[in-house]
Image 1 (cartoon, rainbow, N blue to C red):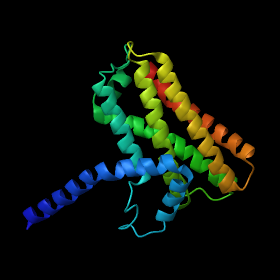
Image 2 (image 1 turned 30 degrees about the vertical axis):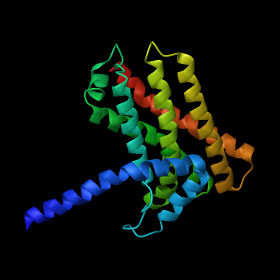
Image 3 (image 1 turned 180 degrees about the vertical axis):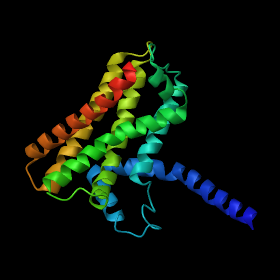
Image 4 (image 1 turned 60 degrees about the horizontal axis):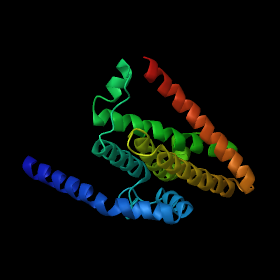
Length: 222
């Protein structure tokens, strides 16, 4: 009986893992083709039953995690070295791919978290798990694409034989895409002008970057 349960669990795990090969590119295409529509899709899925939720796509946190894993694999394939003057704490982060994936996932999660909190504050809603979940999930779709651009550009920066201008261009394009979509999202959700939406989006991104620096600086020094 226990063996059957183990086999069934393995069956579910195998199907779920292999299905990512289908649903990851489909989800990525959905976001790139229509980022606001993808975020609306995420909001609608929150009201669906847990069994059917995100049935035809990867859930936003999983999509963010999968993107971080793929960018790490890209860095490994290109033999990107860790920072040369690593501290004890940063060595711990870079000690294994699991630690690095977890750290980067948490770091990039700050962007959707700050954006979701910003939305709730402007809507004058109580910040709670249930109110925070939907905007955070929707924002994870944007953060994943932004993470892909930033990580790809950063990888090129760390390879001396590759032109830094290409890495900078990739990062700028990713950041610009993120800010434009984020501005439109805030403008639509808060029913304000696009200019006001852009201001809110930029300020939220700056706050997220400040929080990220507050985490990275101790790691670089300790």
